Amino acid sequence: MDLELNSFSLSSVTLIVLLLIFSCTPAEGNFRVIGSPETIVAALGDDIILPCHVQPQVDVTGLTVEWSKPDLKPDPNDRLRRVEYVHLYRDAREDLDMKIAEYVKRTELFADGLTRGNISLKITNVTFEDEGRYKCFIPKLKGHIKSSIIYLYVEPKSVTTETPLQTPDPKEEIDTNVVCAGEVLITAVCVSALLTILSAVVFAVYWRHKLQKQEINREPVKGALHKGHVERC
Ligand SMILES: *[C@@H]1O[C@H](CO)[C@@H](O)[C@H](O)[C@H]1NC(C)=O
Ligand SMILES: *[C@@H]1O[C@H](CO)[C@@H](O)[C@H](O)[C@H]1NC(C)=O
Image (cartoon, rainbow, N blue to C red; front, side, top):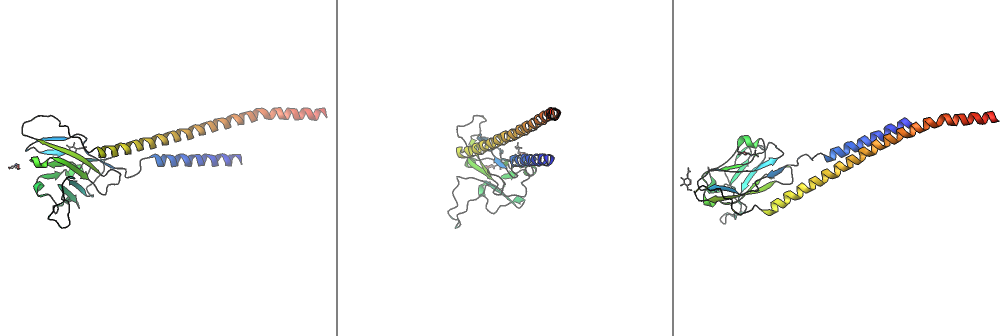
């Protein structure tokens, strides 16, 4: 009976610990798209790379990857008022159907990069019209942050490395911070819950051990008293 109870409480503790560990490991598909917090500076006519990647690393060759300019207005001549893309990767190849004319033959994703979640975009022969905000977006990514904004600044031909004052979309940054803070909090709660349960288990085992020892020590005394009583009678 005692043994049964012991193994029952042990297995339930094991179950709780396992459940906690399970719920604490990052959920499958907690991917996020990360761009660049810094403005990308290019000189007129340069070939540049707009950095963007998925973390943790994952093969995205089977997903749709969209590069767009969020500040661009839909084409007024298009009845469907669709927004065109700087680069659209779909069905494992570039889709040219809705590509902005100015970017035709000037953009490229890295085939080997896609297998590692690197969706950085190469733009050749940069023009002043290329300047502005770019958005890399994976609509079907399993995660909370499916897009990021990268700012491209194009300066005249002279080669200087001065960083302009433009900052990336602050909303995007806040989103990232909130998610990070949430993750840290969850991890902290999980770790402290685990530690509490572990110390409770250690304490219980220790206490049980001590009680058993006391009982063993007490038993002969009881027997002696009983004996004495019988003798007295
Ligand atoms: C993504 O690929 C580009 C081009 O190969 C490279 O410059 C960049 O460092 C890569 N980014 C990451 C995060 O691996
Ligand atoms: C780069 O673009 C400019 C104008 O936008 C054009 O005149 C020039 O031929 C282009 N260079 C290359 C290498 O495509």
